[in-house]
Length: 511
Image 1 (spheres, rainbow, N blue to C red):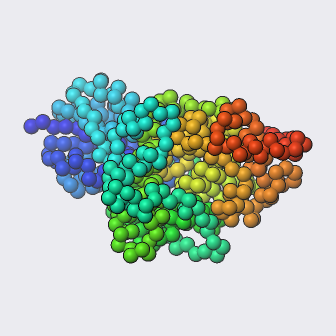
Image 2 (cartoon, rainbow, N blue to C red; image 1 turned 90 degrees about the vertical axis):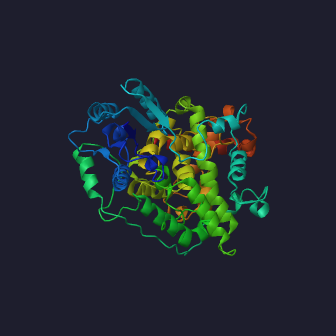
């Protein structure tokens, strides 16, 4: 009887994969926690714990279904901490006649496993992870011949293809996109119901990580780990979101607040990116909730949530596979500066950055506007090298896997691709931050001042950015108004602004 060895990576925890329908007596799984995957970038301690705990839960699920699993825990003395060495050993000892693996979602692993299989003594085959709603090359085909990849057109096509929020051939509500209705600031005194999630004490895994000498960033409280590490727990998080938070998600999805870290966000991104949840089941559950709500749930909330999964998530993966590996070297603005020290400590007098970074260090999480318009915005205004920004985002967030991180960071946040997926750089002065948060009200810096004592760094750096990159941006119609405003400023006013910006750039570790 033939016998196969099947590799499952740490982000391939698909509880409904067709492999699990195969005969248990002829298919052996192999999973491994290896140091290279824990150290290729310095990860948040909660990210390391979360992945290893989720892998162990999946291992238990496989065994409960009757499968034999060759599983290497991080501290196992027999663990060679190498995909190839562990797989080769299993093949030598197990009398296998075929090796299977699922499509890796990271380019580096795709290349590594392709090379590895050429050195194996048995035939190998790469299979689908059966998770995404598009194939790797679909987006590139969709935008063939285009210089820019407009997400909205791709998103509308996906809505039609999967019949999501559609009324025949037209979108529900007669609008495709409700983004303009989803930009409300959290009202003063607004009470947000906190899920107070705490799944399990995972300090034993933290102990293993420390024992193996793996360096990490951030922290984890022994009594609080808020990330689901099994499908059952992930479904609980999804259910809580739909029942308790969904109603307010839409209008407040861009809001930021000093008292509320998560506001109405779902916190399912880790479960999705490890494949414990399938995107279509989440989308269909959201649409079902809306249809059953008797208009109590606004269409804008449902559309905004679904757009992130059906549109943005699939779109970013498509960009990744269309443009890697060269995408990882894009640096349109030729920025070369180091990331300010505050990104690793959270120590800064800038209240918005203090909250966004401290939250990231304590919870391995910040929502999309905190990432884009606080930490990403400031990194871009500080002329930071995209490699620096990539490394930080990939390491600090529990949901960060390169296929989704680098396109959001290097493309959307840092505009390092020169506009492939965003029509303009996403930068702002203090005005936007004040509009969407209460960060500015208790800040050391004055949101209204462009220069002088305690002038908000965002203001001078914002105008300095446009001046510095005039040659690259002056023909961009989306920012023409900014240049019109800049050119109407009096020369002495501009000089004061630019001198202030240069002083802040020089003192980036003291702000």
